[in-house]
Amino acid sequence: MYGANVIIFEGILTFYNPKVLSLLDMKVFVDTDADIRLCRRLKRDIEQRGRDLEGVLKQYTGMVQPSFNHYIAPTMAHADIIIPRGGENEVAIQLIVQHIHTQLQARGFKLREELAQHPFHAGQPRPDTVRLLPTTPQIRGLHTFIRNKDTPRDEFIFYSKRLIRLVIEYTLSLMPFSEKTVETPQGVLYHGKQMSANKICGVSILRAGETMEQAFQDVCKDIRIGKILIQTNLHTGEPELFYLRLPKDIKDYKVILMDATVATGAAAMMAIRVLLDHDVDESNILLVSLLMAESGVHTIAYAFPKVQIVTTAIDPEINDKFYVLPGIGNFGDRYFGTEPSEEC
Image (cartoon, rainbow, N blue to C red; front, side, top):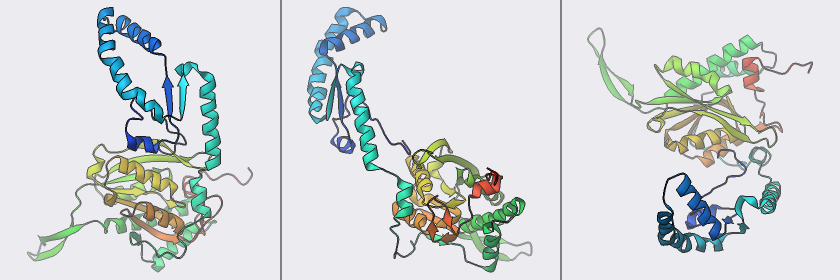
């Protein structure tokens, strides 16, 4: 259902629950003649289930038909469209398809475009859940290398890895810690800290987020990594979920969600929604990125106020191609060497 333009919710009791009913944009009741329903039941139960005619009729007249009349038939009043003859009524089905197509065009739901062209954060203070690495000369120096369009690929990878390591280390410092006392080799007690979070896992948003996995594994021993592939639909420009692999017990973990850059925040919000649907507590999610756009930061923080956001820099703008400005270009293309040739 992530990124879907049309969701079909089907069931004989679909219209029975008022809460479900209020969520439906179009309510279709597929009606079939009672004699045809009985014939289908007789054919199924006798041929496939080995039942006798008398038993099937007794059950139908005593339980099935009364239940239909009492619970299902009255819900027909809630339907916007009633289709007789079910799936055989091609004319009615085609009319529904045309209506849905018209509604989608009228609504024009283009989330990324709306977020980029109409930022709602103007004049708003930066959310409290945002954690920005201290802008030291080292951080600015690393950004200078990766932002420079003339930086060779090997150097881009090298300095990106350094910056990724720093932001991962900084993210771990935000985890809960407790007091712990140890004895040094000299027999002196040292009062230190120990991370209280026993279960931490990483989830990378492919493909750029995958570049952050190694740094995470370098600083966390035997860490578990999940993956989410979210790509842009070439026709709509909207993000869609293509692949998902998460630890089975992820609901018990602190989750570090990794993506190299965040522009509008549409893909990150979809990834967070996936985690929430897998019972991860919102307060246990930390979104980590090298670079974010101001509008993306505010959008994510507004939608998920308990998610902590960690980044090394926040840029002010997004262009019409959804790149952060001044930005670093397409991070994935520059890192993996898949930039389009200038001759193309």
